[in-house]
Length: 90
Image 1 (tube, helix red, strand yellow):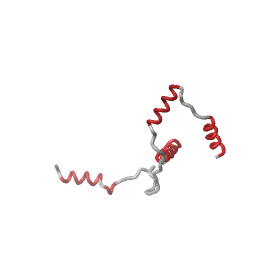
Image 2 (image 1 turned 135 degrees about the vertical axis):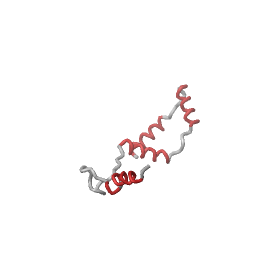
Image 3 (image 1 turned 45 degrees about the vertical axis):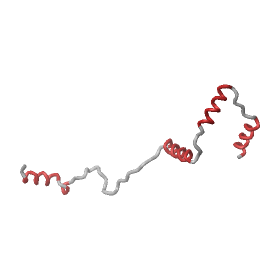
Image 4 (image 1 turned 60 degrees about the horizontal axis):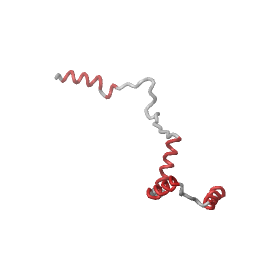
């Protein structure tokens, strides 16, 4: 390898000969930005809310599914009315 050839290439492509595109903005004038979609924002809110809840009791879920399949699941009407009143009137 010839050293003088290396030096000539280095002078052409060296850091002192960098050129800016005429369309490039001035240094420091550009900024990166991130936008989170509405879905992404709602997902983050739901994820935080789910972290503060109790884990799902799979045994209880299986029990209720079995009762629903058998037709033996019964909810008292007073309990339904109470929950509806709580949601409506706070």
